[in-house]
Length: 248
Ligand code: G1P
Image (cartoon, rainbow, N blue to C red; front, top):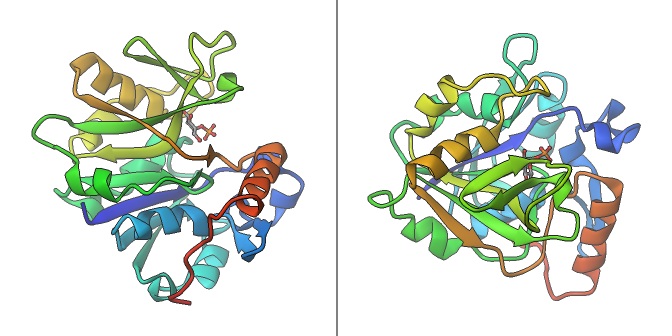
């Protein structure tokens, strides 16, 4: 697997008022490594895993600042392409943003990672060995204390932010797909919250029994709320994890 898509749009409502004029994914994560913009962590997960062709999708309002900060990707040892999710012309939601990646990924299998997700794990093996003969997609689960904030996996089905979660297995923001995903995304209907949901895509694969379920072993966080951002900073400061910025 050589290509990946980072989804870095959204309103960042859970991080207001800081996100009134800065994209959530550029907010700093403070640690002994410095004040590192949030999005550097998912970039690092991809690059450490051997993926260097990366499409970054962000909103019309914030794409400029993201491009200014990240440039062409050479400082990460990668090559970045950018695309705008203009909410005046496209519906909201992760699955809606994903549809914009079709021209970039073509017929190749690819990874999708959410721009606020922090993973301690190394995914090299998963990226290398994604078995497209057996599976059309892969997800990565992590046990959490607050599953109602996430997509929750139970008995071959994912419920998006359930008020009464049936398990404590959150669906993390890393997904592996083949180009079949675009057919599924094109047939989605808007959810109750008015978005095209990644969970609806993954439930299609559950139904077809073609979803590979993996588990995250190390620390995982979504960094999308003040509390989870602070927890991530604490993890980094108390562990041996260090962001690899040797190319910068
Ligand atoms: C999204 C997905 C959710 C997933 C989460 C992981 O939620 O919809 O299924 O568990 O990312 O970070 P969001 O945080 O964008 O609302």
